[in-house]
Image 1 (spheres, helix red, strand yellow):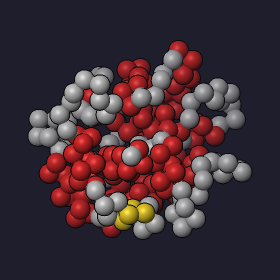
Image 2 (cartoon, rainbow, N blue to C red; image 1 turned 45 degrees about the vertical axis):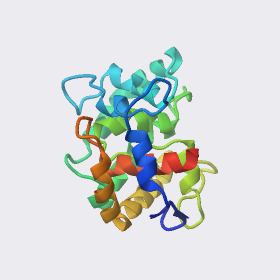
Image 3 (cartoon, rainbow, N blue to C red; image 1 turned 135 degrees about the vertical axis):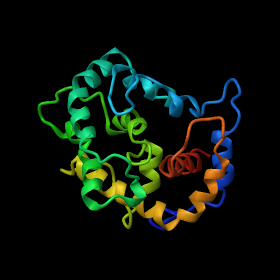
Length: 214
């Protein structure tokens, strides 16, 4: 499949996804099914402090300082999350919804937020589980994969806000999902029936991350 708006080609998406979703063995580093199936409260739409620790399952350390910052940001993140329409997937989202996803990162651009030990990738790992078909995961590997003059410019810098960066990234990911819709439908058959569900957006993240990790 061709990803990053046609600028990169992945030939082994099926094997990459099978490896990530396959049976767990001690010592393996992949987060499925534990990150995707983690239950933190009775309301899947409501953030709680347990959600702030979920990124640890993806290899991101959440120490006391980061937990302090995330806890302070939680009301802002919840208000932004509440604005997202329910039941919408990224592949079908309109421009208004895409901009609302990007607006989740507004707290990182707020000059009143003095504590900067929390980055966009950490916010994504907290929020993705609340809207797994709409809010994408990303980290440095995903950022580099999509970084191309014909796709998404470099991460926020030179005056570009986090919201502006995410507006570009979510549209590039939506393009990939639409152009490869049939392939992702086929890949969905690889998701273990006994495990938690995996959205096409999560599968896209896995394929991109795994292809960048090899």
